[in-house]
Length: 487
Ligand SMILES: Cc1ncc(COP(=O)(O)O)c(C=O)c1O
Image (tube, rainbow, N blue to C red; front, side, top):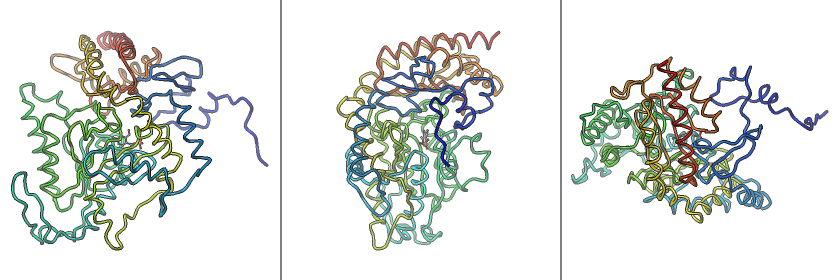
């Protein structure tokens, strides 16, 4: 016997009884409402009670074109549904996946020309790591292969015994402290956030973590050049200690989100690229957030001239109107997989799903037509200037980021840059800031995965009106937070 759904489902009750929210303390809803978002337009959302919010987080750093393109995207999806609702990239191609791969390849820098589609960011990271691992065995041992030992030096031949003590196999990954790269076991293992790793240990072994580019708590007299050297020395020491011949991938975001929009110091990416070349390690730029305009260029790799061998993309690829992501590989990485019987031994049913691909294609068409990336490039200085007004508040220690990707670090003492302890963070961020901002109609994220920050990352269509509204609400709420802390 089948049952039919009640005509009018009590959404609040049904949410409490049946829906499990991600990264959410469900006990919070025993005596309180589940926030239910029912519609969106532009940079705004509306909840089930008709209340409007400015979404200063663009969903999850991801609704790049904002919420107003449903009609157009829906038409693209419906047309694809009629033509071919599903087929797989498992052994077969279909027009939308081919077109999307070509379109993205035309946008990505350098020779990042090959796309392997997946369903989201975690799967992209997972797939990048697996691809990097298999790349070395697919390439075979490194006999006679020329590598660059350091920039400017002539290429030398690799010492056979030294180069291939593992038979050419490599498996370790390097990522940065506090970085977030997703939640599936491989991607989770790459994360540098202790609190989300701990419940699932033991994780996939042998990920090494290096320092991130957080400069706020470094000695004030340190120059940018010294800071860059300090970071690159740490990376090189980690590579040496881990055994370069066992390390397949360095994975980093162009601008690190977790911990609060850590931008790279001058010379950092050039140095990372050089180290990867010197030790023959693949460099993966995790562009799940920074891709598709967020930092004022199509990719963070353009913005910082990163020249990665691999790139992971998701969120902004479809502006999150569809569940789609990809690993983008350079021609060099692809090369061994084009030989003889070689095959990347990985796949998922939904990779390159035609409806998801059609939506992503439409998203890129809209981004080009409506000059979404240009909007970020044009408005980013105004956005920064507006956010920097918050520096007048005693609780705001730092405003950092770039493009439409910012974090505001909260401090207990501005002069000493003293941070809040765990208990204070709990009271300040979870108990006060998050609910109060939401109550005031502003969605942004109070985050304590590193030092406490408020993350701000609006849809890429935002302009001065939205910037002013963000700063006005944040200013009030942060001022109130300060009086609470010091009461
Ligand atoms: C840099 C980065 N990589 C990977 C992921 C995981 O993406 P998803 O949530 O789509 O699995 C995220 C998600 O926020 C991310 O920010």
